[in-house]
Amino acid sequence: MSTQLLAEDMVDVLGVRFHRVTMGQTVEKILYWVQDGSHHMVVTAGPEFVMQCLADESLQELVNSADLVTADGIGVVWAAARTGRPVPERVTGVELVVSLLQEANVRRQPLRVFILGAAQASLEACLDALRVRFPEIEFAGRNGYFNAQEVDDVVAQVRDFAPNLFLVGMGQPRQERFIRDVLGRLQPCVAIGVGGSIDVWGGTVTRAPAIFRRLNVEWFYRLATQPSRLRRQMALPRFAVTVMRGGPRGRKR
Image (cartoon, rainbow, N blue to C red; front, top):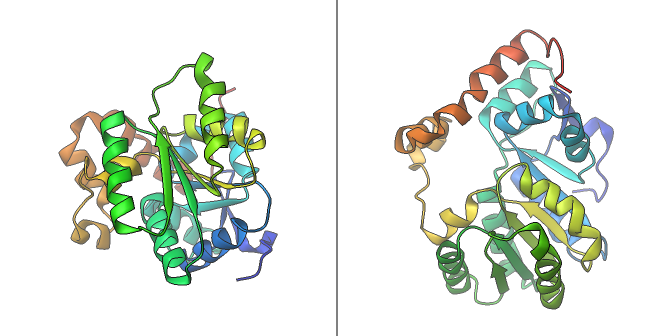
């Protein structure tokens, strides 16, 4: 994959610019970036996050300033196809990171990975699982429960470890805003918002069975097993309606 992402490689979905990349291209790009001595931010965005951006112009600007934005949701894939500029596939955070680690292992490319987020028990389970699965990669982490007064301590802990891959799982949009605010204070690295992936990697939360993922109804499985998500997932029909009518009728300020 080229080391440069061009405007023609993007598609606009309700004001959020997505890169038209495959999983393989995304992995290649990030593994290149972890060696280039610069700071990079990667966002994986689904319909719910797009609707958050639609309601918050500053959040939309943040996302559109990221180095790479991937379609984390079949709704985004559908919406991009309607524009005539389809994205080739979903690139979800939970699968992207595993693919990255697997490819780095195959290439024997050294990686130092810091994971920030989740409750302490979930984080420890995640770190234990990843260390067993990828023994050649160095991992460290800290739970995501800290207040504004502790941010400097968190940044110092990350700096001391000096990761070249920084994974932040504190939920959207908190994680993206946190990355924006602290990335420049860290050594060069690639930062990725990973949402609830830490719980999945550690086995604390079970991902939807493969049949649901193949049918692109993972959202339905999550709703069935976590009814508390109903209010959050009401963003999905609002997203579909907004796309079909050609965009928002007005933005909340």
